Image 1 (cartoon, helix red, strand yellow):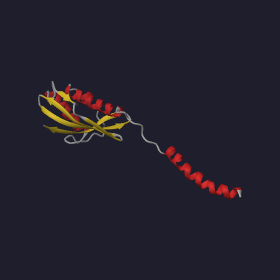
Image 2 (cartoon, one colour):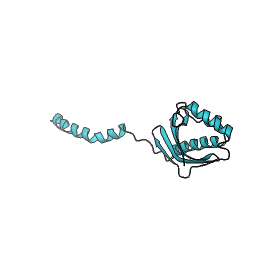
Image 3 (cartoon, rainbow, N blue to C red):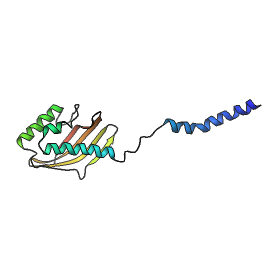
Image 4 (cartoon, one colour):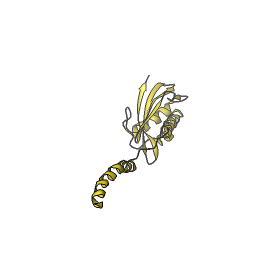
Amino acid sequence: MIRSRLARWIPVAVVSMLPLFSLQCTSTPPPSNGVEEKIAEGVAQGWTRHILAQDAASAMTLVDPSFASNPFPTRADLETYLRSAAERGYFAGGTSDFSIARTVIKRRKATVYPVRLHTPAGSFQIGLRLSRNGQGWLVSGLDWELY
């Protein structure tokens, strides 16, 4: 008799405990409170400050080894362009404008767009793609547009 009562209540107990177990097994990521977005945007701002200061070597320290984009298919192509632009003074006295830029993060990738660069050589709008690796956020690609 006790066994039959116990046998009836065990399934009820198990079913009623399932929500508690499922809460323990799943986890939601903690809210970022915008911290990662600020860090990624800070890297993007640092990169633009370096290129506007015509310091290609420092700018390249913020570029991911796997960099690939258009119009610079490889990291080496970007570095060649930045060094050439610095020698010619393309960015001398330039400014950057992040006032309308939005930073969007999806997992280990971030996009900062649009960033406006105003230089003696012209005005550009760029979108920076960043990736997060063991070294933190690094520029992994960019889209360069004249406007």
